[in-house]
Length: 282
Image (tube, rainbow, N blue to C red; front, side):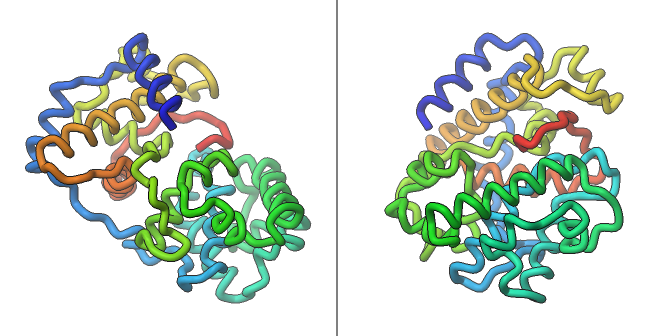
């Protein structure tokens, strides 16, 4: 994770489309009196949770499918989370490793009760198949076995799955399967909601060209300078916010806690405009 922080800092100091405003960070932290609002992981009540290994399986499937909703104006994260929850409540074997390998696009839509093709549907199906295959091949078909093999290390977990898992820690409130002794090592999740919130708060400043692209809903190419800078500067900004929060409060503040708070602010905003990148990496 040090490499993520270092590379993000390098991009932030060399970026031409996105600028991290230190004074903006200071104003946000000052306004919040050195503490961040505590946001419960499932404050909306849309996730499956039974305090056991089936929840870990649910989170693994959810995270594998959690990207790029914007091409469908009506689809959002809530549909995915609640749809998978309902599917699992209806059939406890819905996410068994062997079944994950067999889902088709129409079957995934039926699982979610979604009436039309999903954005990047073929990619979502491919990822389901990969998840099922790898879990079956290496972890006895259970995501909980993967978590247990990490020895309660978030860094080892990320290394194993090359995917960020704040949901796991948040869902179990840092206990049981969510007990990760080095959760403070994890950075924020570089999605497309958080940078939009950071920009509204005055923490991120955009070039006129990037601002125009976002305002006109123009697609920003995956892997382009603009997209890389949005990701890296978001990580860098949240790290700087965390450091300032810690310094002012004298208490530990986690990047994943800041991430959850910023994300919750964003999803509750009706007028938030985010950048649009067609990619599975969100």
